Every structure is written in structure tokens, then in C-alpha cells.
Image 1: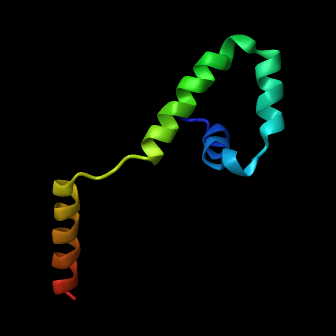
Image 2 (image 1 turned 135 degrees about the vertical axis):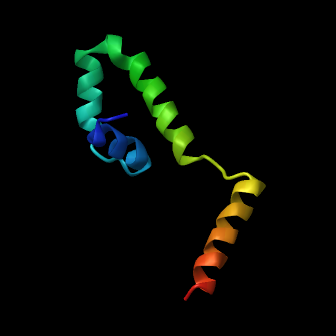
Length: 70
């Protein structure tokens, strides 16, 4: 996803971040609606991604190793 403006809008949508622009966009290009919804879902999935217990353990190990070097 390379459109930073779109990504910021998706991240801030609950705060009504420039909804007008995207509403006009969909009115002008209704065929892009489904593509936008898929892109929004993809961005939201990335934002809501959870770490597995193994990933958390690896991260803590790296943090602890870094701290022990100080």
C-alpha cells in the first residue's frame, strides 16, 4: 500500500479524517469502491496484527540482551 494519504485516512477514519475527499472519490469512481474496501481491510489487518507468544519471547530476549550490554 503506497498511498500515504489513504493509509492515514484509514488509520484515522474514526476521527473523521478528511472523509469528504474519499466520499467524493467514490462518487466519481464508484467502480473503485470494492478495491478501496479491500485495501482498508488489509490496512486494518496490519494494524490489528497480534504477536504470537513465541514472537513476544524473542523480542523480550532481544531487549534483555540489549539492556545487559549497557
